[in-house]
Length: 137
Image 1 (cartoon, rainbow, N blue to C red):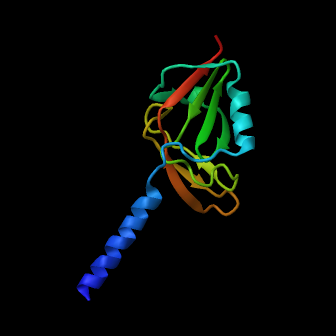
Image 2: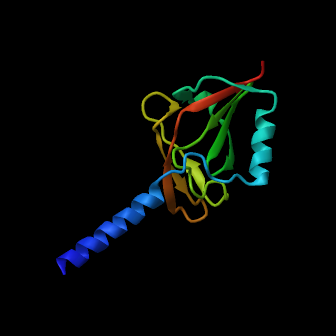
Image 3: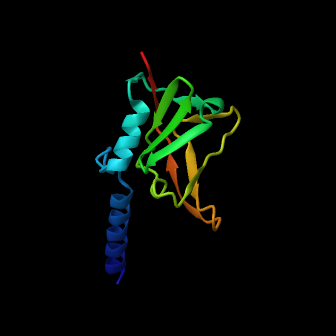
């Protein structure tokens, strides 16, 4: 009986690990999301990724899909690709709730919550990666 229970535990853990793994950006972006991202980045060039984005630069947020969030700062557009995606954010069913501690900024590695504003229920979480700035030459 113990071997059977251990086998179920291992199989369950393997399934959980597989469901939590990322596919390194292999997700298929919808035509609408492709268009929105292309429009936001038109005529811009990517700069080196930055680890943190001050909160005053992250006031204008646009969700492209579960894997892409854009922050606008006048001249610069910052692209955020949360590690492993942010499942449900692109559907509009959830809102991203970020918390800042100490210095008011969003950083690579920050844990963010998804919340259904209609019910107040938590919908999971996602972790920010580095921010890639795009500027016009």
